[in-house]
Length: 300
Length: 243
Image 1 (cartoon, each protein chain N blue to C red):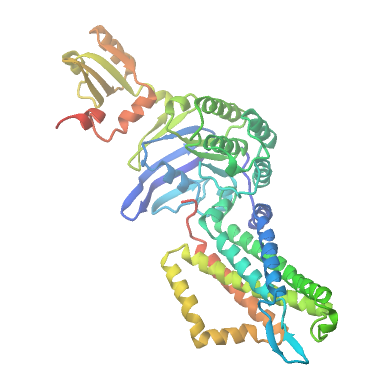
Image 2: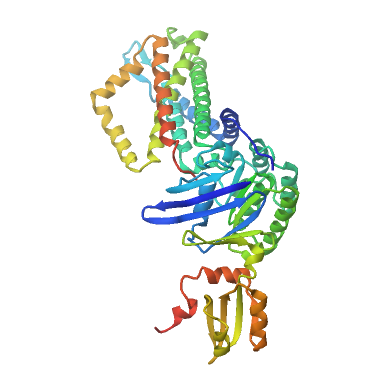
């Protein structure tokens, strides 16, 4: 079953399209990472899917229904971000009890154990927490709610690396025990990629690619070596990233259809060929301009 | 993961209870405001001093709980405006909600708040009388209108409740339309400043304020409240949230 279906979705603010003719679908019980640069339209898309915002054009179906202002969709969705609002007079303990009231699948026991694990005092108020602790609490709420569709927008903002790592482990463990559809946006793809099954890459409000993360790992190949030798390997394929070293050395990232074949071909002519980390690849794919920082400091 | 099906009223009920817990402090705010109103009433700030000569001195302190009423109605109006602020409105959308359930639970909360304000307002009127009786010397108090019968107290609670809710529904509607466009803030401010100078205002005051038949008064105010709340729901039903 498709949990999320987007068909030509556009969301405009005045003359700017935050989301632009976006079409994709997400199957039930999968974890998808939503990746993109700042301003790529990630948050807008997640809020459209949660039914908070109205599409300007196109159709969204969540669990086969239009999510905007929809009680059924809201009952089966939770949206976690750093701006979650709670009354200033409620303690964390009271918020968890309230969550149990709203979400029947909410695992209250686990949520309290997690508070303890992350040293969050139950009697504290939500607005008394530090930025990292707020994110930790919000993410606990998101994981424990066991909603059919769990949406998290940059849930690890402010968390230190150890907590982030721990949190992803917990999320994966809980997901295996309670499979559901999770959509998570993050800037830390390198930390997240181990738990992701799919990746949806946005660029300028539109879909750049949507594929299993395993395939993304063999989507591109990098070559490092003498300019002529490396250039001979391009064979008209798309160059994703290029950086010069010294007088005649170059580092090149190109798209590949056959990773293994390209790898052995490069090694045969003594070119250093490697796979590209998914994090770097996403950065190269969404680069606004070839050349990056070098372009800024060039005297052109 | 099993899918959850909720009906509107179940969610409204949950949200209403969540609101009572989240905003219980507002009830204390009302009490604090009323204590302030009582202090005003007891200091005779709103009472009317009359005349005195060498033999008699008297003061007419008519309607000693009017200050408390004014403070209460202003307080509930302020809380109503708060509830429609983005910060408060978004709290509903942290958990399960749609615009309708959010509005209905807000209205439920405002009805509770108004009823609480009306009861405590009437009781503070009684308290003022008791304090005056004990401290100002009972011999100086004219009996007429001073001692209240239970029926009078009930009517006072009922009328106060309807007045508080009436203003609350108007404020709720006003804040709902300001969320569509900031232009409405100017329109509302202009209306607040200009309306008292027009004959429409005095007509409204006599329509709602000078009705002697309690039943008709009840019908008039309740219909107006329902209309304002309905209009607020219609206006906000298509609004985006957490944007």
